[in-house]
Length: 297
Image 1: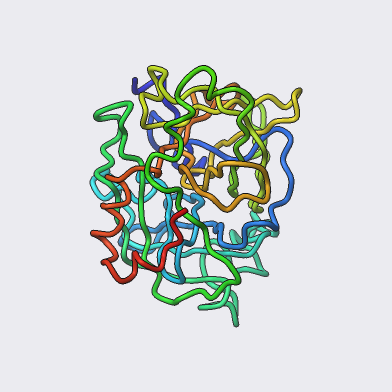
Image 2: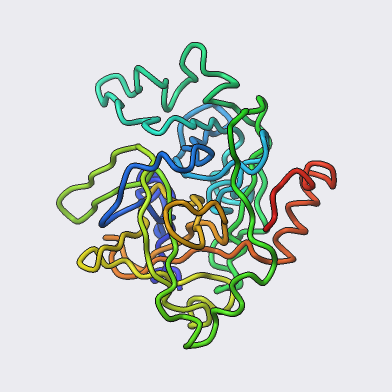
Protein backbone atom coordinates (compact mmCIF):
# COMPACT_ATOMS: atom_id res chain seq x y z
CA UNK A 1 0.00 0.00 0.00
CA UNK A 2 2.95 2.37 0.52
CA UNK A 3 3.24 3.14 -3.19
CA UNK A 4 -0.51 3.21 -3.73
CA UNK A 5 -1.45 5.87 -1.21
CA UNK A 6 -0.41 9.46 -1.65
CA UNK A 7 -1.19 11.52 1.41
CA UNK A 8 -2.05 15.17 1.03
CA UNK A 9 0.40 17.14 3.15
CA UNK A 10 2.56 19.92 1.71
CA UNK A 11 4.42 19.30 -1.52
CA UNK A 12 7.68 19.89 0.36
CA UNK A 13 6.94 16.86 2.48
CA UNK A 14 6.25 14.81 -0.64
CA UNK A 15 9.83 15.35 -1.71
CA UNK A 16 11.12 14.06 1.61
CA UNK A 17 9.17 10.81 1.94
CA UNK A 18 8.25 8.14 -0.56
CA UNK A 19 4.52 8.28 0.20
CA UNK A 20 3.54 11.93 0.15
CA UNK A 21 0.63 13.14 2.25
CA UNK A 22 -2.06 14.42 -0.14
CA UNK A 23 -4.73 16.97 -1.09
CA UNK A 24 -5.38 20.51 -2.32
CA UNK A 25 -8.55 21.78 -3.92
CA UNK A 26 -8.44 21.13 -7.67
CA UNK A 27 -10.75 21.17 -10.66
CA UNK A 28 -13.75 23.52 -10.58
CA UNK A 29 -12.94 25.36 -7.35
CA UNK A 30 -14.04 28.69 -5.90
CA UNK A 31 -12.50 31.00 -3.32
CA UNK A 32 -13.84 29.98 0.07
CA UNK A 33 -15.32 32.88 2.02
CA UNK A 34 -18.01 30.59 3.48
CA UNK A 35 -15.82 28.88 6.09
CA UNK A 36 -13.72 31.43 8.04
CA UNK A 37 -12.70 28.74 10.54
CA UNK A 38 -10.78 26.76 7.90
CA UNK A 39 -7.12 27.61 8.40
CA UNK A 40 -3.70 27.13 6.84
CA UNK A 41 -1.35 25.44 9.33
CA UNK A 42 2.45 25.41 9.10
CA UNK A 43 4.58 22.92 11.08
CA UNK A 44 8.10 23.32 12.44
CA UNK A 45 10.79 21.03 13.83
CA UNK A 46 12.61 21.43 17.16
CA UNK A 47 14.89 24.10 15.63
CA UNK A 48 11.92 26.08 14.35
CA UNK A 49 12.53 25.13 10.72
CA UNK A 50 9.60 24.76 8.31
CA UNK A 51 8.55 21.14 7.72
CA UNK A 52 5.28 21.22 5.77
CA UNK A 53 1.87 22.82 5.58
CA UNK A 54 -1.64 21.42 5.90
CA UNK A 55 -5.20 22.68 6.33
CA UNK A 56 -7.75 22.23 9.09
CA UNK A 57 -10.86 23.48 10.88
CA UNK A 58 -11.36 25.39 14.13
CA UNK A 59 -14.03 23.67 16.25
CA UNK A 60 -13.80 26.00 19.26
CA UNK A 61 -11.66 29.12 19.83
CA UNK A 62 -8.67 26.87 20.64
CA UNK A 63 -9.35 23.39 19.17
CA UNK A 64 -8.13 22.92 15.59
CA UNK A 65 -8.95 19.68 13.73
CA UNK A 66 -6.56 18.41 11.04
CA UNK A 67 -5.08 15.16 9.70
CA UNK A 68 -3.02 12.77 11.80
CA UNK A 69 -0.29 12.54 9.20
CA UNK A 70 0.20 16.30 9.60
CA UNK A 71 0.72 16.16 13.39
CA UNK A 72 2.26 12.64 13.47
CA UNK A 73 4.28 12.39 16.69
CA UNK A 74 5.94 9.07 15.83
CA UNK A 75 7.33 9.92 12.41
CA UNK A 76 11.06 9.94 11.68
CA UNK A 77 10.77 13.73 11.55
CA UNK A 78 7.96 14.94 13.82
CA UNK A 79 6.64 18.49 14.18
CA UNK A 80 6.92 20.08 17.61
CA UNK A 81 5.13 23.38 16.96
CA UNK A 82 2.71 24.97 14.52
CA UNK A 83 1.29 28.28 13.38
CA UNK A 84 -2.24 28.64 11.96
CA UNK A 85 -3.45 31.39 9.63
CA UNK A 86 -7.16 32.04 9.11
CA UNK A 87 -6.95 34.67 6.36
CA UNK A 88 -8.64 33.53 3.15
CA UNK A 89 -5.50 34.45 1.20
CA UNK A 90 -3.08 33.49 3.98
CA UNK A 91 -0.13 32.74 1.70
CA UNK A 92 -1.28 34.14 -1.63
CA UNK A 93 1.36 36.86 -1.65
CA UNK A 94 4.25 34.52 -0.85
CA UNK A 95 7.51 35.87 -2.26
CA UNK A 96 9.94 33.08 -3.25
CA UNK A 97 12.82 35.56 -3.06
CA UNK A 98 12.29 36.34 0.63
CA UNK A 99 10.47 33.11 1.53
CA UNK A 100 7.68 35.07 3.26
CA UNK A 101 4.24 36.49 2.51
CA UNK A 102 4.73 40.17 3.46
CA UNK A 103 1.06 40.64 4.34
CA UNK A 104 0.32 37.61 6.55
CA UNK A 105 3.87 36.66 7.57
CA UNK A 106 3.36 33.11 6.23
CA UNK A 107 5.17 30.81 6.87
CA UNK A 108 7.52 32.43 9.41
CA UNK A 109 5.52 34.79 11.62
CA UNK A 110 2.11 36.22 12.43
CA UNK A 111 1.93 39.68 10.88
CA UNK A 112 1.73 42.64 13.23
CA UNK A 113 -1.71 42.90 14.83
CA UNK A 114 -2.87 39.43 13.75
CA UNK A 115 -1.70 37.25 16.68
CA UNK A 116 -4.82 36.06 18.48
CA UNK A 117 -7.00 37.62 15.78
CA UNK A 118 -6.42 35.76 12.51
CA UNK A 119 -3.22 33.94 13.44
CA UNK A 120 -2.19 31.70 16.34
CA UNK A 121 0.70 29.55 17.52
CA UNK A 122 0.78 26.13 19.20
CA UNK A 123 3.14 23.59 20.74
CA UNK A 124 0.34 21.12 21.57
CA UNK A 125 0.06 18.65 18.71
CA UNK A 126 -1.72 15.30 18.86
CA UNK A 127 -2.56 12.46 16.50
CA UNK A 128 -5.09 9.66 16.78
CA UNK A 129 -2.46 6.91 16.68
CA UNK A 130 -1.58 7.58 13.04
CA UNK A 131 1.28 5.27 12.00
CA UNK A 132 1.86 5.75 8.28
CA UNK A 133 -0.10 2.91 6.61
CA UNK A 134 -0.49 0.59 9.58
CA UNK A 135 -3.97 -0.89 9.83
CA UNK A 136 -5.06 0.38 6.41
CA UNK A 137 -7.79 1.28 5.59
CA UNK A 138 -8.18 2.41 9.20
CA UNK A 139 -5.23 4.80 9.09
CA UNK A 140 -6.45 6.75 12.16
CA UNK A 141 -5.65 9.89 10.17
CA UNK A 142 -6.96 12.53 12.58
CA UNK A 143 -4.95 15.19 14.39
CA UNK A 144 -5.57 17.99 16.86
CA UNK A 145 -3.78 21.27 17.51
CA UNK A 146 -4.51 23.28 20.66
CA UNK A 147 -3.94 26.97 20.00
CA UNK A 148 -2.00 29.20 22.39
CA UNK A 149 -4.21 32.17 21.54
CA UNK A 150 -8.00 31.78 21.28
CA UNK A 151 -9.40 32.89 17.91
CA UNK A 152 -12.82 34.53 18.11
CA UNK A 153 -14.91 33.98 14.99
CA UNK A 154 -18.54 34.43 14.04
CA UNK A 155 -18.83 30.67 13.54
CA UNK A 156 -16.90 27.42 13.98
CA UNK A 157 -17.03 24.05 12.28
CA UNK A 158 -19.61 21.50 13.42
CA UNK A 159 -18.87 17.78 13.81
CA UNK A 160 -21.33 15.30 12.37
CA UNK A 161 -22.88 13.04 14.98
CA UNK A 162 -21.57 9.46 15.07
CA UNK A 163 -23.01 7.34 12.28
CA UNK A 164 -24.21 10.28 10.16
CA UNK A 165 -22.88 8.71 6.95
CA UNK A 166 -23.84 5.11 7.69
CA UNK A 167 -27.06 5.31 5.67
CA UNK A 168 -25.01 6.19 2.57
CA UNK A 169 -23.09 2.91 2.58
CA UNK A 170 -25.54 1.15 0.24
CA UNK A 171 -25.74 1.56 -3.53
CA UNK A 172 -29.02 3.44 -3.19
CA UNK A 173 -27.53 5.71 -0.53
CA UNK A 174 -24.62 6.67 -2.80
CA UNK A 175 -26.83 8.18 -5.49
CA UNK A 176 -26.00 11.84 -6.22
CA UNK A 177 -24.74 12.80 -2.74
CA UNK A 178 -22.81 16.08 -2.72
CA UNK A 179 -19.84 16.86 -0.49
CA UNK A 180 -17.64 19.94 -0.28
CA UNK A 181 -13.89 19.98 0.34
CA UNK A 182 -11.95 23.03 1.51
CA UNK A 183 -8.26 23.77 1.96
CA UNK A 184 -5.16 25.73 0.99
CA UNK A 185 -3.40 23.14 -1.13
CA UNK A 186 -2.10 22.75 -4.65
CA UNK A 187 -4.65 23.41 -7.40
CA UNK A 188 -2.79 21.87 -10.34
CA UNK A 189 0.11 19.45 -10.44
CA UNK A 190 1.75 17.32 -13.10
CA UNK A 191 5.32 16.29 -13.98
CA UNK A 192 5.90 19.69 -15.60
CA UNK A 193 4.54 22.23 -13.12
CA UNK A 194 2.72 22.82 -9.83
CA UNK A 195 0.25 25.65 -9.23
CA UNK A 196 -0.37 26.65 -5.63
CA UNK A 197 -2.55 29.60 -4.64
CA UNK A 198 -2.04 29.24 -0.85
CA UNK A 199 -5.57 30.60 -0.61
CA UNK A 200 -8.62 28.95 0.94
CA UNK A 201 -10.49 27.27 -1.90
CA UNK A 202 -13.51 24.99 -1.98
CA UNK A 203 -15.06 22.60 -4.48
CA UNK A 204 -18.09 20.36 -4.66
CA UNK A 205 -17.56 16.65 -5.22
CA UNK A 206 -19.64 13.47 -5.21
CA UNK A 207 -19.62 10.37 -3.04
CA UNK A 208 -18.24 7.24 -4.68
CA UNK A 209 -18.09 4.73 -1.86
CA UNK A 210 -17.82 4.19 1.88
CA UNK A 211 -17.09 0.47 1.83
CA UNK A 212 -14.62 -0.12 -1.00
CA UNK A 213 -11.29 -1.78 -0.24
CA UNK A 214 -9.71 1.66 0.17
CA UNK A 215 -12.60 3.04 2.22
CA UNK A 216 -13.52 0.12 4.45
CA UNK A 217 -16.04 2.13 6.46
CA UNK A 218 -13.26 4.44 7.73
CA UNK A 219 -12.72 6.64 4.67
CA UNK A 220 -14.98 8.63 2.35
CA UNK A 221 -14.16 7.97 -1.30
CA UNK A 222 -14.96 11.05 -3.40
CA UNK A 223 -14.93 11.72 -7.13
CA UNK A 224 -13.02 14.57 -8.74
CA UNK A 225 -14.45 15.26 -12.21
CA UNK A 226 -13.92 18.84 -13.48
CA UNK A 227 -15.75 18.05 -16.73
CA UNK A 228 -18.83 17.41 -14.59
CA UNK A 229 -18.39 20.56 -12.52
CA UNK A 230 -16.57 18.87 -9.65
CA UNK A 231 -13.33 19.47 -7.84
CA UNK A 232 -11.14 17.52 -5.45
CA UNK A 233 -8.17 17.72 -3.09
CA UNK A 234 -4.37 17.71 -3.53
CA UNK A 235 -1.07 18.45 -1.73
CA UNK A 236 -1.56 20.91 1.14
CA UNK A 237 -5.28 20.15 1.63
CA UNK A 238 -4.50 17.43 4.15
CA UNK A 239 -6.61 17.89 7.25
CA UNK A 240 -9.01 20.30 5.60
CA UNK A 241 -12.69 19.58 6.14
CA UNK A 242 -14.95 17.32 4.11
CA UNK A 243 -18.43 18.79 4.48
CA UNK A 244 -21.66 16.88 3.89
CA UNK A 245 -23.58 19.04 1.42
CA UNK A 246 -22.86 22.05 -0.77
CA UNK A 247 -20.81 25.19 -0.26
CA UNK A 248 -22.97 26.53 2.58
CA UNK A 249 -22.60 23.40 4.72
CA UNK A 250 -20.68 23.58 8.02
CA UNK A 251 -21.14 19.89 8.88
CA UNK A 252 -17.72 18.20 8.96
CA UNK A 253 -17.86 14.47 8.29
CA UNK A 254 -14.18 13.89 7.50
CA UNK A 255 -10.72 15.36 7.01
CA UNK A 256 -8.87 15.30 3.68
CA UNK A 257 -6.49 12.36 3.86
CA UNK A 258 -5.08 10.80 0.67
CA UNK A 259 -5.28 10.47 -3.11
CA UNK A 260 -4.22 7.60 -5.33
CA UNK A 261 -1.76 9.32 -7.65
CA UNK A 262 0.73 12.17 -7.70
CA UNK A 263 -1.39 14.28 -10.07
CA UNK A 264 -4.38 14.35 -7.69
CA UNK A 265 -6.71 13.04 -10.40
CA UNK A 266 -9.66 10.68 -10.15
CA UNK A 267 -10.66 10.05 -6.55
CA UNK A 268 -9.68 11.40 -3.16
CA UNK A 269 -10.31 10.12 0.35
CA UNK A 270 -11.26 11.74 3.64
CA UNK A 271 -10.93 10.02 7.02
CA UNK A 272 -14.32 9.91 8.74
CA UNK A 273 -14.89 11.84 11.97
CA UNK A 274 -18.55 10.85 12.37
CA UNK A 275 -17.28 8.11 14.69
CA UNK A 276 -17.83 7.46 18.38
CA UNK A 277 -14.20 6.36 18.73
CA UNK A 278 -12.78 9.46 17.03
CA UNK A 279 -14.96 11.80 19.03
CA UNK A 280 -14.17 9.97 22.28
CA UNK A 281 -10.47 10.47 21.47
CA UNK A 282 -11.02 14.20 20.89
CA UNK A 283 -12.79 14.45 24.25
CA UNK A 284 -9.92 12.58 25.97
CA UNK A 285 -7.46 15.18 24.64
CA UNK A 286 -9.35 18.39 25.32
CA UNK A 287 -11.51 17.37 28.31
CA UNK A 288 -15.24 17.12 28.86
CA UNK A 289 -15.84 20.85 29.34
CA UNK A 290 -14.07 21.91 26.14
CA UNK A 291 -15.62 19.05 24.19
CA UNK A 292 -19.08 20.31 25.25
CA UNK A 293 -18.33 23.55 23.35
CA UNK A 294 -18.11 21.70 20.02
CA UNK A 295 -21.28 21.80 17.97
CA UNK A 296 -22.20 18.18 17.18
CA UNK A 297 -25.12 17.81 14.81
